[in-house]
Image 1 (cartoon, rainbow, N blue to C red):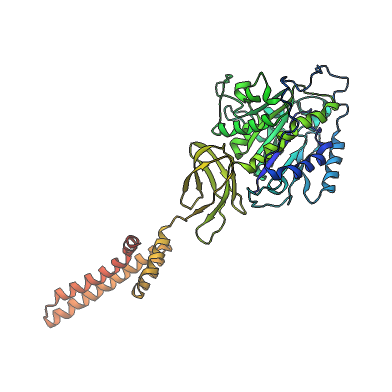
Image 2 (spheres, one colour):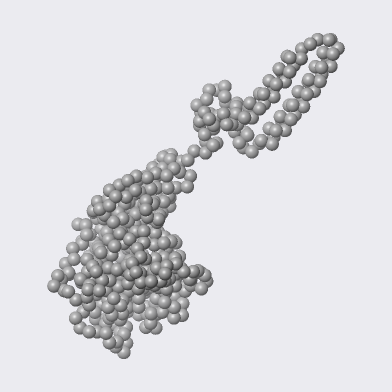
Length: 485
């Protein structure tokens, strides 16, 4: 599992505004990340207004999407970029919309399409440390129709299964765009993600809803980590952190206004993907001429958010003590009921945590003993590998004991292994046969003794008990050997 980040442009407004600046953004990443977090050179400390633009642009033009890319133009731009930068990118589709428009994703990495166990702490580039997946539009039909809902008039950000209410549970009733996202999360194990919306200026984090549907603060188990991530975005923004409506430019979703069936909470609950909902413009349909300015205002925030995945948290791998095999186990932090899976191939994990805190980190894998350790996480990220010991089974105990026994016990161990192999019925029959033979032997001895008038009863009985005793001694050797082990 690589360190993965997805960027989803969910709203209609921003379905294509980054495409003209993809190459420019990529160049900025390569030139800036090597020194750590990016410096926000565009931040204006004299700016105190929450709104992005001084002019009132709330009125809509006759064509609110004039100057935006069409879906077909967006597809051509993505393919052209992937061809031009094939060494660090690839494009693929995760599904289709109601009207059959492909949901294209562009992946940016030094090894696109390959699974890597990347060292998480090299002071190098985002391209070398992170697999960045960008879905330019989740709702191409809605964009074409100039509305929030898709072609079926369904709000896709209310179409996911919800933790509090039994809604959208029928997979066949979900919209194809929703199913595509859910399958995407199942196939690609993302560490974090962000979806971009229009209509406000704030970084929103879980939970988005409450069980009683009231509007109040309702934090998730990783509330502190989410606040840290949201603050990184807000403080790197041109003026988001100066908001008079949202303190620090961030908000808990349920505290703002509860929604149900949203993608943000679903990603975190089901796949441990830390998702933020980024509202980056008060105007849902800003003029196309304003898009370059929006990019400049959000560029540093996006880069710093992705960089934070590398520069903070706990990262490592899980191994077996038997030969050092990678184990696709689970990482859990005590007090946070949310597990993170390690990768199937390299068993690497990436657990996001807020800095300046003490945590007990646990690694688990079925069939292996749980391991835990306490850490103090400072400002920088930490490498933490786990080596797990296999749980010893009864048969393994017997075999291990056999290795420590002398040669005289070899036959007994082989017999025990024979018993454990499901042959108890055969042994029982053998006991009966031997017992019957002993009975015949005893009868014959009685007959001979009667003829010769000799008294040897005690010796005969002793021989009988010795035989039966030997049989049951061998049959009951299993718990005896287990005690030795």
